Length: 312
Length: 308
Image (cartoon, rainbow over all chains, first blue to last red; front, side, top):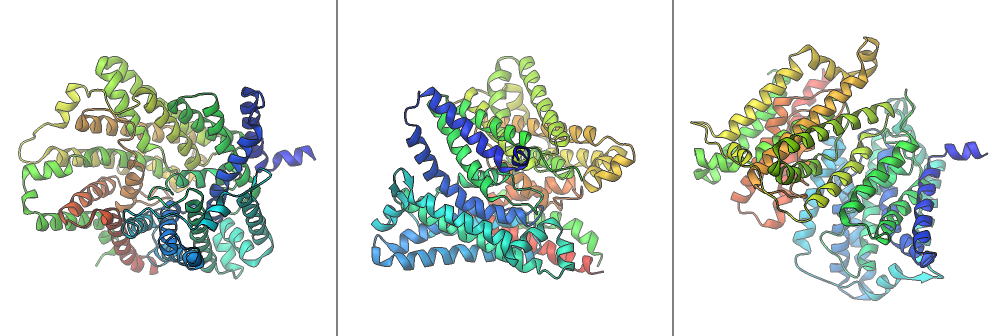
């Protein structure tokens, strides 16, 4: 039983998260243990949302990665704030517009990959430049607050547990079910393991990847709306940190970079680990430089411990 | 029309078109001084692109090259300014680090993306500790080297051609180069033929480290002071440069000369967009559009090639 558990890739990320949390509260002698967890849950949820999308993209096979997530988050946040214009009555339209734009980015990404045969890294990178320019030009110099209900939802807590974390937990469970129980999810795994074999088995790899890229962009859109609600407004650099974070959480969480193997619980562990790590280093009073170095070494350490792909 | 030839010529044609367009929009750039000014920052970008190319040759990807170049500029502006010997030692240590990373990635079979992602934090952290804010001074010889006025042809162009030609010779026309590219093309066959994958990878990573160091020093010679964040965009530039130059992410298919040309194109596109006076909001977007257009052309050209 124990041995089986230890072979699960997500165990490591949760183990690392718990270890870091324990080290933090040992240092503070138990003070703020709960508050740290609450904060970690709030901030980690954003990373988890985009991490789920990135996980699906990475799972569709080697070379597939979505670098346009940060730009899409920004675009969606800007559109949502501008369309809602601080008016609660316009919330639904704002959400629809933002998610529609995000999904369009995903479709555009896939168009570049499929029609122009551009490698996904470069395709999503180039499109992210275009998307970012669109966001900059559309949201020029405005600072609009989110409607009150949106801000309240994004910041609400019950007994120290953020409502949003619960919602994202439901989303994660849904994704896990989609991945293991639906034709689409199984196709993602099959295409990622062996695209040609999947094609011979009659799966439509093109459609699977199309849905995946749209899904990833859509989730980035969701993240953008919630994030601008949470931080009380959209900013043009709001997506920046999610480029590295989305990739790091997915891979530390045990999803295979070579594709074909996804891991939903691992994303939670990894996202909490990354946030708690920064909290721990802040608590210890580490300087910015030390914080960066240790963050980097921990990321490398976890991946070395968890091990790479089996030699084939 | 020979499509393969056309495909190989495409990076050069792209550069020619961007150059012609720049001359058309701003005729004054068509001079020794103008070209020098526009292309001087292309030298460090080209060096970083070549570094990235070595990693891509063995099917890996280096997400840490930008912060690494920044770190080199910080070390160069502090340690190397005070004591050249210590500075040189530090550079050698950095190159050795790259070799060790290559070994680690190979032995544990780790995803290079994640390891180099972690490394990018490490490099940035060290830089920030050395120079919390931009500062320091470039060694005088470095400044002199980057400001050298060559007769007839501006220095950046000569530098780019030399870099491209040397790496082209080593990687494309030497027996060692064939083994190195084979490490990306078919690692299994390489191992069965008795070559050490570990050694090949370590050498390629160290070469990447070497060119990263050269890039950082070249950049330092131009900016004359160190800055941890000076090269943050280099990671993306270098990847885009390799691909623009006709390289592919897998299979050891790269083109050193193409990579250098790709880097020049990217650097030039920046100036071109400024001359066009398009709104600053769309500067980044226009760069994305240029990338897409070039790659679309390539897809068009190779479409016929693959059909046969």
